[in-house]
Image (cartoon, rainbow, N blue to C red; front, side):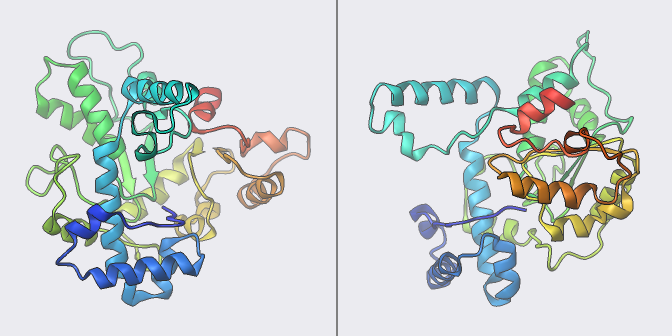
Length: 314
């Protein structure tokens, strides 16, 4: 689930949403900021009349983020450039303040290169049909799907585009609360390009696809997610907040096998908070009472981001 603490509504959104009742946007912004609650989902559940404009704002933020997103070497070079210029004393190096903060490194890049290890030949697309890998996400964005499609399309330049799309459609990426829109390769008719031109029509369309935990009912995606968890040998929580409602909707304690190993990031989490997270996750697993329990089932290390977790335990 995305938490939008300290949400600010940028001037670009105000210009784009001139016909979408600017007073509603300002009302939502003011109320949400002053509510001091960390979860926008909870805020909208408590204030259902404000939910439509809240979803509109979320859709805008995701689409705006697509325009700024960088992957792989591009992201690394951008980060290095900004950090170098900052170290030289520049007050606003290369528009430093206008760039999103870099937190951790690119785990997409690492995981992708693990997936294509050993592939030889111009038609050697990876095989995702075996079901050994699946993603269950509480976010609405499409960055992972876009990254994988763009990467494979440019790696296998002699492979017809439909074959690349067919390959990726075998990889399970389940959005429990919906996705702002499919990409063109996922749905040629209803799909929307990555980094699209933001318009009022687009915002209305994508906002309608957003569901919150408090209004989500049983869906094919949710049911499939539960089945995948029941079959999993390893589960990795990446950038997860461990909210009780998210764990509950997946019925994790009831679904997970007793032999499943669980690993999770807890970046910036205090020792007591890590203990509480670990207790909630492993209390129903049959573990031995030993010093290894602390690191055996939930790898929640304060300074371990998504990339480090995958490099150490995948």
